[in-house]
Length: 305
Image 1 (spheres, rainbow, N blue to C red):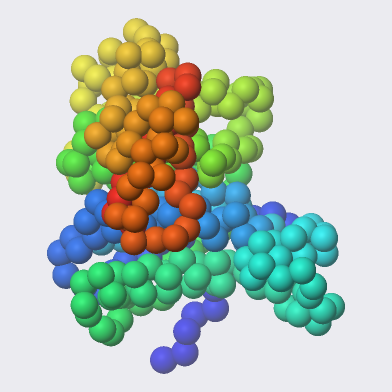
Image 2 (image 1 turned 60 degrees about the vertical axis):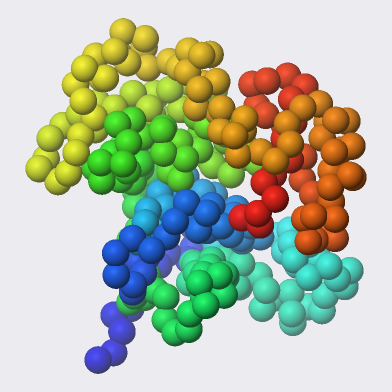
């Protein structure tokens, strides 16, 4: 049976909702697997011409909401820089540049790089062979504005509907959790939702308004899983859906348990020099500032996730 043609718009920036499920039974993706998939999303979103608007990585599938930019809005110089970054080469011919430009503006190639990279990781880790993913990924074109906000809320509420958490930001592998727990580290997420009605340019305020929308929608029982408890929503309304510093600290406290080393940048570097032989890698490790805690840095865990 021939494949149904995928709906694509190639003449203007377009928002897509991507969904892909594993072919395996149950919930095979553990926390460290979700972390690796997020790592791949970060990597390829810096290479391809996309803005990541939202995501949710669950135990057997993932959602991605992205805005993809067409070739006509991408300069050759930007393509050249990304080519050099990816392949560590200083020169690229015109024919190769044209081919690479087409690839970096392709939704199919973007998702393929993420899924293939994760398949290699997963199969090697668990000593398996064969297909990891089910049928080809699904995608639909989404209108900016209220339609997009509704979709993003649906994506971020996945862990609530599944009964994993009571509040979406408690789940670190969804976009609202990433905003709150990491402070949108590496600027992975865009908040350009096309909501002109909000008349807002401040990113923190846009996230607050979006969080309010998610909570109000998430308390509606549609008979499709768990919802955000009404008492939690009432509590948030009293606070104007703003997070207190103590709450932000609580959400970000995973740095105090998941980090291999924690302290000033100098302290972390000194400890790293002493123990780097245990890491099994010659690559320079990344020292991550703990957002919200001035002068505090962490060394990522010794496991390679």
